[in-house]
Image (cartoon, helix red, strand yellow):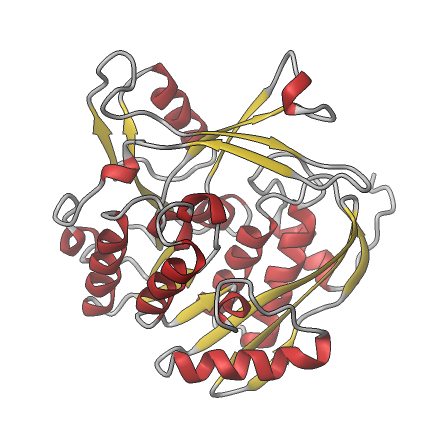
Length: 345
């Protein structure tokens, strides 16, 4: 039985380590994807049984992605395999080149993901009633998947509708990526999609991105976050929880990290504050936050404790390379309890 299912693209991340993409002679390979990272963290750190609905071209690169997913413990039985034509003319697998950044040089992502197998997914390709009738408790997707093509929006809508029909809790992360919407309506089109899909979600992660006239249009100071989330709550009257990370970036290697959330039951709640957090690789930290939050909400810990799980898990994910979490539940709970970086023997 699967606890949590996610819908999204899984790409190969090619990491030049401390170097630059444009001068690299070797890359370390990881798997990653906004929606996938959440279920991977839920499986590896929090011990939940998870699965990913995605599509891959059936060639050696696709099988490498599958092998990495298997190493992460995520169920692969819902992967849709698309025949390979030999050169990727009709369907291919996505690549994501990512620099971690250092000091005044921010992280840089260069994705190569047009015409991927998952971007061609259409309504009716997945039997969602079969997926959700097997005891699934939570479904997660987001704006990265929805922004892949004109058809993926409808697939996300179809999946969310089916999940709600089966009584499955639904979460959505807007996760706006300008590169996905260039030439396709930009931020205005992305916002329309986000509002359409977020209105079907019980939990919205990254909810601050829905404040303002376009995605990421509001840069709220700490004292402005409650009003910003309240404005989002008006747009999403059926949402039970709105959550967001809060990050200031003095440099690529040092971030001020925290979180906040709103629910009708609790009102505005803040997460732990972690100023001056030293960062090795920030990519995937928002997804790790979502995983910790979902773990807490599924476990009935209450919103404040769930925020703490998310904040601590996101912080620990920034201390290791790659998109995916390498943290353990014991490390997360120790950090919540005020743990330090002293050597453990």
